[in-house]
Image (cartoon, rainbow, N blue to C red):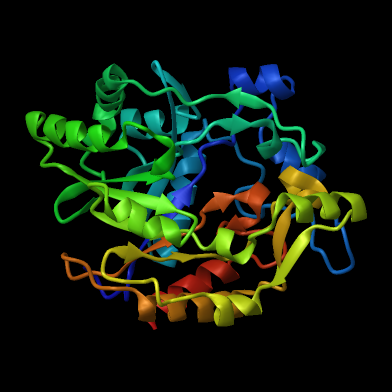
Length: 356
């Protein structure tokens, strides 16, 4: 490891390019840039829209864009990207093209791993005009024992790539909310067998959870570690509160400074990798039923990163590992890429916290 205080793995959304299903659901050429660009302030002091600076409203089909992202991440001290991976069973994937091109072209020369976004796609996630009680399923997860093998072999080119990230010399594979998968234990055990068969040396499975009570639940499964996403803890709003937000046309907010006070570090034990957040604002997607941090600044973000690095445990590789939410989730307001408000200052804040 270099002189970084921690190894930072940034979640990466491979969404910003047109594809068939989005064309069918939302209209020809739709990407989440549509939601980002049309966002408007919902109360006094609410900063919207957020406009990208250096990279513009990019298209992830372009190799040049992916190269520029990697260069920015390297300069900030990010160790690699965790690409969100959408596998719905029966061979169905979405948003797979950017990473397939990264592997095919062997560019950019930047580490990566996979995070399985193990959830149904709901209309509420992509349309800020929808009411808080009228959800529609667009894509549904399917599970079967045969699909476990099919999933592994579909991803095998990624797993064999020399850039694929490891902990304890095993391939990192993160799973979002594993409780939704009734075959999760069989999935882990079978993939370990297949990894050895293919000469990969095994997987390092990480469960991502949103609730503290899930930590012990996932410890009963054969996961190697946990990643706790505290946002549910910060914004534990009931359906009733969301309906009130819809009626009064005001999203649920929390001042970013409260992260420094409210962020619980007691749960961060030797098997838990913490998460850091530059910002959060889901109103481009969800409108008035969204949630957001107010008054996030690069200076406060740097304090937050230092706080979490200090609390993070040292793993078996002698490293501290922290997940960054996120590299480019523009429609959720958590991104590190330069914008017209702060430019490179969030990137510089991360670099300062990691190296100084």
